[in-house]
Image 1 (tube, rainbow, N blue to C red):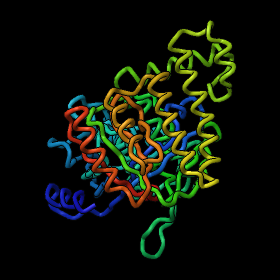
Image 2 (image 1 turned 180 degrees about the vertical axis):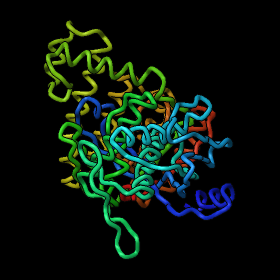
Image 3 (image 1 turned 30 degrees about the horizontal axis):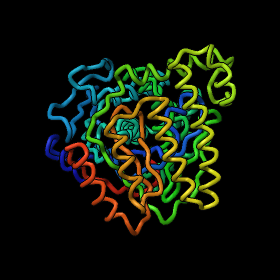
Length: 396
């Protein structure tokens, strides 16, 4: 947070009145199952979007970022996309969604700093959306209901607002997903936003995207290590949309609204009715949801070795059926598989670049990191620094 506050003071010449943060996430098991109403296991991690802000009364909003040199300035009454500042669209999308729900707000100044690696599949975009929503609750207190806004929450004697409850957190997740779907133009599911809001320290989230419920299972004795392939992904492109369209069309041909309700035997039996890509996408999603069910059992039985095998299987399915892996991600997973301390590894996030998540025995992390650094550079010529992530609580 210090970098966001320092940037704010340097640019706006006074101290901010509000500070918020929202974590990035790692998708531990399941890939592209969320928009198929499926199951996902994820964690919130100690890489954050930080926002320092203060209100202003002239109806203007000025955004500055440590990652981008040019401020973005616009009016509350005229929120438009700016191709030269696409990073600001995630903030603008949230503001538009709040206005559609009846929120009234004046302008504000905000400084943003991120420790979430951009393009690594750790969802810096959702963290920015969630942090923006939390900031607006601080600036102009409101309760977010299923249909709009409720009565403003009352601060305590120190001026602190009550924490956001579970029901309202899910409403925040829905709002932020709508911002990314409708304003940014990425047809994502709700995984990233839920993960940033519902994280629990030292626990994996078990997210049911049909019922929109979240459970938690404890993690112990392992470290989450992220290996960034250094191949940047850009989900505003067509690959993500194409995968979703193939999943949806496969579901329709299989007589289902979502692939969540389809079994693998149904996919195999209907192969002739599907295009090759529909079959591949459906095969991956249906088998991936089954892996999450099995993974939950393994985790609750403290069988980390078996859970790690499901992670390896997940990557293989993404590689062979969904086809959203890359040669660099495959190289990282195969390197990880060769190290005895690694229980499981797979790509995390949308794919087409980004990073792998590796579940490693806690006391052998340094050896694993050295193995991955040297092996990846030898295999690809790319220098990469693995990142150890702590599992943390959700946004506040």
